[in-house]
Each structure stands twice: as C-alpha cells, then as structure tokens.
Length: 334
Image (cartoon, rainbow, N blue to C red):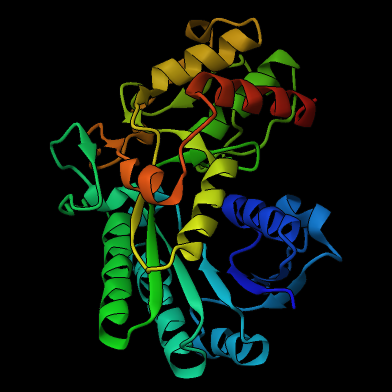
C-alpha cells in the first residue's frame, strides 16, 4: 500500500519540489491551498490531477485537523509560513500567528488525531539571528533578531517540546537559504535573476517587486538593499530530499541543511548578470529603502550531521544554481 503524505503549503517552492519527489517515490500526496480568488498556482500546475488538493489554513485549527482525521497521513510536512523576513516587521502579528502559532496548531492536531504520523516542521537559519560564529550546527544557540526568526524559533522549540513530552516523531529541518526557478519574486536571488532576464530581453512590463513597484526601472536599473549581505545559498530541489530523509531516519532529530559556504549579494549580481553577457555595475543600485531594520551576520550551515546520519550533502554549486535560475527566467520573461 502506498504511503500517504500531507504537504501543508504545496504551492510554495519547497512544497512543489517535495510533491515531485514524493510522487516519484510512489506516495499518495495531499497538498493544502489557502482559499482565495487566485486560482493560478504556477509552481503546481504540472501537478494538477496527480495530487489531492484541499483547502486549509494555518490560522484555522479545524481545517488542519480535518485533513489529518480524514487522510491519516504517514508523513506530514509543514512548509507553509509567512516566509519573508523583510515583511515580518510590517506584519508582526500575522507573522506570529502563521509562522509561530500555525505549527503549534499542526502539532496539536497530530497529537489529538493521528499521533503515529511523522511530522516535519520547516525551521530556518534565521533562528540563529545575529550570532557571531563562522558556522552553525544543531547545538548552536538561538539569537533570532527579527519577527520572522523569532516566530520560527518558537515553532522550533514547540516541536522539541511535543517530541519530548508526547513521544511524537516530530522533527525540525533547520534549512539555510535555498533557491530555485520556483522561488518567489520577493526573494533577492529571484529578484536578481528575473531582473537580468527582463533587462536582457528588453521587457517593457516587468513583474512587481515586494514594494508593489516594477522590478526594474525604465532605464533598466534594479534597486536592491545591502549588497554586502551574505547568505549560505543552496538548491531547493536538493533540500527537499533532505526533508524526506529526515523523516526516514529511525529517530526523530533536528538537522542543519546548508552548504557551509557564504556569498554576498554583490557576488550574486555579478554571476547572474555575467551569465547573460551583462555587467551588473551598469544596472544594480543599492537603495536604503530595501535595507532591513536589523541585518543578520554571515553564517554558514554545517551539514555534517546530515551527511553522517542521512547521507545527504549539497551537489549544486552557488554559481551553477544562479546560472540555472537565469536560464529559466530568460525563458519565462520574454
């Protein structure tokens, strides 16, 4: 009999790649959508008819509990959240409810209605905030310094609490930044690769950025925040495999998933523009309005436990990832 997996947040970058992986492995996949008037979900159009789509919302305990009662999934992946750190200052209450309390609703629904299920909760590098360290492992102390990271820290600690208090197979994947052609346009990697494509192709009506403004100006300029900001960037398609491996382990544990390298935004721009035969210095502007109120320090994700216990390690280099995204966007934005 095929295993069943419930993906909360299937329309996201991670949710859609995870669905692809689970279908390849023969799972029956159930994915959640939030009810809205927008029925265009680019990331999962290829999955229509292959997965069961259900309406649910992390604000609504009963909508989550109903699916767990009906389907009795073997594995539950909570990928959903208000996932943009920069937005969390403007939406602190919403971020707390969705990103912090939302996972608690999932934990409690599993505890009450299907405690045998294995649960994966998406945690983030942002829980480490502004710590001063070269790299982080599973024992590194938390120091979240924005509403998103603080909400994720609460959720991560609640996973640990339920695991230890109720004996649930509840785990947290502490994923460092991971990107792909399915990344939302409000994340800096995709902003850059989409802008490169729009500039290279001379697009007259570019998509909107997170401010509700055209991604590039009429003179083909891309406005970004702090170009010196550094991140550990990996490939999302590889990171969802780590999620699956975490739930296949014989013991529920938390794992760091990263590449143990960092690159800054200026490097990102240089690679992306050069791949399209452009010079980023001709097009990129650092604009104070895109700066965060508090920035996080450079930090690498030490994935050594995942490599040792799960056999997982990153395969795609930073440069190859960015080139892959540029090539995809050159086709998307014509």
